[in-house]
Image 1 (tube, helix red, strand yellow):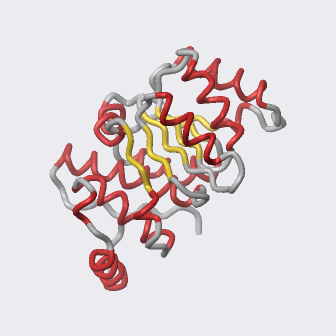
Image 2: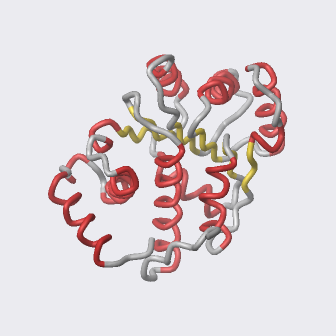
Length: 213
């Protein structure tokens, strides 16, 4: 993340407003980035880190497992960070199924990708149908993700999705509310990359790569 005076001032406000004691130091670094990217302090009270997601996610980054995402926006948001750090490949569901709209089709795509990369990291930021399909495959033990970042927003099906995530036993990060979206998914994963890279190299935080204009 690129630091300037405004960034420091914003993080100072976040530090005053959020109860850091309910998070581990690593979790709090993720929470700060989510709140900073959204300007919404409520995210700190609805984020849920389940089954050691950060340690498992960092180990997966170090092992260079592939990253599976549901939208090209997320792919574009995380790829520059990966290219200057861990170099994990990123695959997007939209690239494999531009016209796919039914659950069965999405499930088949996840299943096919999962056979080649059974322990991938999955980032689902927008499409609840994709997340349902993924969790069905996890439940049937066809996929064993290293980490699931699940942030689709919305009012319908959210409670069902969160119950499926809890039941799955998979390492995951979710929001126990209607909040979410691709912006927070990107913020979470960028934070995870930075935590891992700092731990690996003990360097100052890397600058935010410039993407596009």
